[in-house]
Image 1 (cartoon, rainbow, N blue to C red):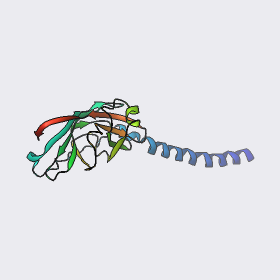
Image 2: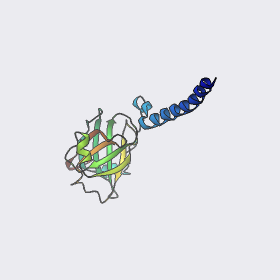
Image 3: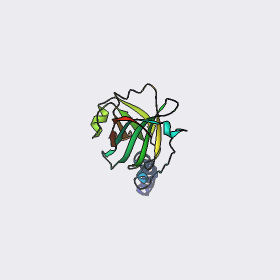
Image 4: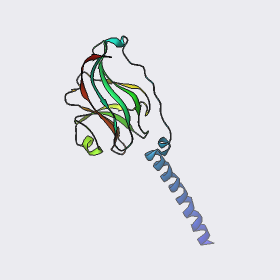
Length: 170
């Protein structure tokens, strides 16, 4: 009878530990995000978008995940600058941020980790057009690449090296 009682006590400890481990594992990896998408379709932020000036632009290429679309930096009528993604698509994931990286390109995760970067915040969606406001102090001569960065796993989902645009408008 004692062995039966000790087995029962053992399972009363083991089962909660397994449940806690499963919940923590789920939270850390967020596996449902591999099969779900967050779509966003933000309008261009300028009131008079004909006055918006294209400063830089680049095309996304994949890193650890397929990534596509265009990243364009505009100066809009009030003098502020906005980074706009168009026709954008990448994988969803936990804790994915948009970085401006001080590198000519970011083909792998190490190139982002070894460069200076500015975090523009959480990605708004893994599919669709979206805007990110750039600070007036962000030096576009230094920060030459946009990275879709997973902070949780230190992975570069994809990047867009930026090239200065000719004096054109939207």
